[in-house]
Length: 172
Image (cartoon, rainbow, N blue to C red; front, side):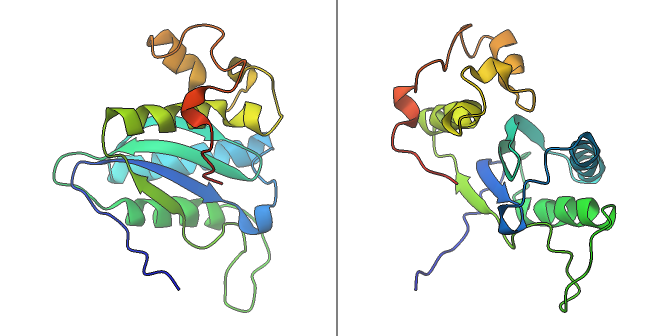
């Protein structure tokens, strides 16, 4: 058994993967997408952070967060986002009092440098192509890709072929 420990770095940038329970594709309806955005907004109003990139897939999401100096508590934020989403969603409760909407926990990776940050940005924005939902990252509606193109981080047409930066990466 591994001795996994989370890295808590004040003011750090982190890549996250959050998955739905049993990979149920609940993030496909406008109602649930709205609920997810409201959950983020609710938590960000009380616990500020910046979302630098995000993609929402039917059964999981990936994002990069930048925490502010002196702050390292991403775990509380994820707990609150999941909780807010869950309490506003009508789902049956299991024997443990849980609604079985999200997998327990989440996967996080501390971004060590600019190259690491860039690879994870590419991974996020290429994800809908990787999963076969679209052929062009610009065609996926639930992604920060278009914003990144406008900011000059990507050229138009990026991601039509697998970028070398994401080759071999599997963060699912």
